[in-house]
Image (cartoon, rainbow, N blue to C red; front, side, top):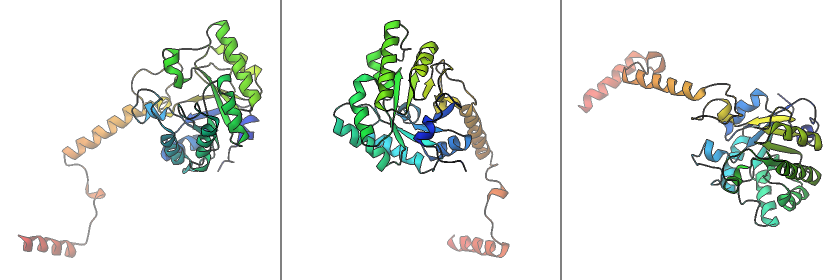
Length: 283
């Protein structure tokens, strides 16, 4: 049994042993991630397209996220569980933002929340932190801004954009976030941000220089269909394995091979004969 991972423990890993982070959306995947040694489990709004069948992350609600976060925390992982605040849950007012963030802790048992955006979200970040709720930031390719960005495009490729992102990162760190996700940015920019802030950075499509890395559970294990993003490395092809296993199962059903004698419940011969007698009486 590992010690429970905490926000201070995450912060202490800055510049040290790389942090491991993966998404999970239910109790079984949380148990797998935790047994594998995840430091952080992110209940991402990516549940939208990885589990619920939506085309993007914009369709999930706070209630959806609370539901899935609670499922993860019921697995009682040693990893720090971070709940992802969905689109429009931290955009309208400070009061509503804090209330929504608090639900992740009170109702779902999360240890922290994550939200996207830089300086334009500072007021919300500061209010959540003032309510004693740890916040993880997220900069670069922010999926909730897919329409504003014109698609899922690498961010910070020009000097001016890189400077804006660096300034955002420093502002979030000064505001008190305990870690920063850097997604879809050039590796050199991620390196500069990592050096410039005193909190750990966690990369996804941001090169090797961050203080940790995160990927989506379904991407790592090859459950998702189609061509993965450039930054994904598949460590298994569980989707193909699961399909083959089910095909074998269905073939055995059709051939009368399942269930076999070992997979059936038996009674003694005398009782069985009595049962057959009952059947004869019915006829």
